[in-house]
Image 1 (cartoon, rainbow, N blue to C red):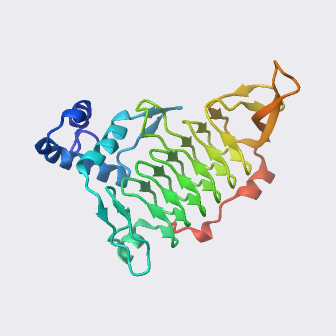
Image 2 (image 1 turned 60 degrees about the horizontal axis):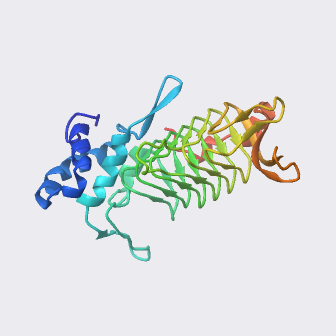
Image 3 (image 1 turned 90 degrees about the horizontal axis):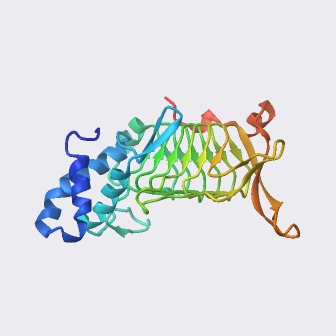
Length: 281
């Protein structure tokens, strides 16, 4: 479903959000089909919190408002979890509630026990979900693996053929409204226990080693040139955790991420994904 068609009209969502504190019960009932239509569009991938336009990423702030409005229009309900599985009580149902074998086969997903995906998150064909958590509004590209105990936050954008290693955290954002989501472009590798937050953009083919922490203010230092990046990891950069001296207090070292090189054939051999574990066809 595309914006402005069917049951999802961005203008109506914008108006409702602007008046959210004053909406009557009848008005909430009236906008519910709009909210549901928008969540369906997010779930299928036709609507996104951010999308690439040329070399830039354009944020759709209406998507965040849509998600926030769903907390007004929705009611907490229990999940339909099977025998022996945890029950949930939430306003947003889980994505795979009610799916049967045919639905999973058509979607070409592998979903390992313990994987939790909320409705409104798009998971493209060929994705592998280990026991992980993917939040509403996230967009996960084809062939990506979300490994054990990794999290993908609300509205985060993850490209195709990425690997998010065990325990890694990809930050989400619903507020402030104008803040950009985290973006991992295609073929990004995120090492175990790393964290990427605050709208950081990791360019295509970059490799983050185990334990790299990136926020907007984190200096990302190119070891070879001395150039310092903030909020963006260059394409094919190989990044490790490190430190750098405080220019005002040289005896103090503060955290920095360090670009030690740019990915070569040897690097690619170490982080190459394995199609045997993915449902590509």
